[in-house]
Image 1 (tube, helix red, strand yellow):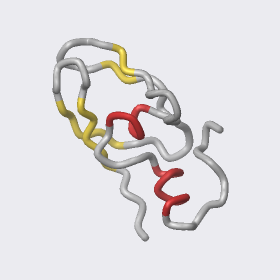
Image 2 (cartoon, one colour; image 1 turned 90 degrees about the horizontal axis):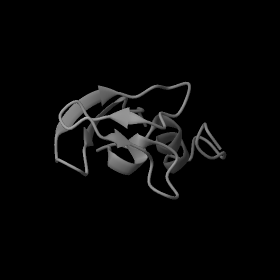
Image 3 (cartoon, helix red, strand yellow; image 1 turned 135 degrees about the vertical axis):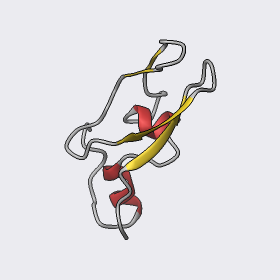
Image 4 (cartoon, one colour; image 1 turned 90 degrees about the vertical axis):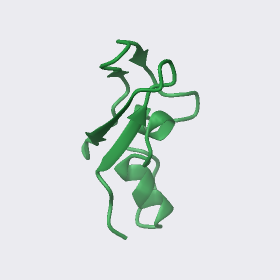
Length: 76
């Protein structure tokens, strides 16, 4: 399985969407919506903003789902 690095983040406050490139070496805990300037944080139980608000989960979670990794997300 090829890991996808592009994810569309949707702001839960204003609905603005933007495609971003996910980091591969660390989780992204915070994201500022460029439209409404709200600071997004992961939902409880999620490791990063991509897992909470993205169209694609972060690379470590993708690897785990594909059975390529036995660990949790990179920030656990």
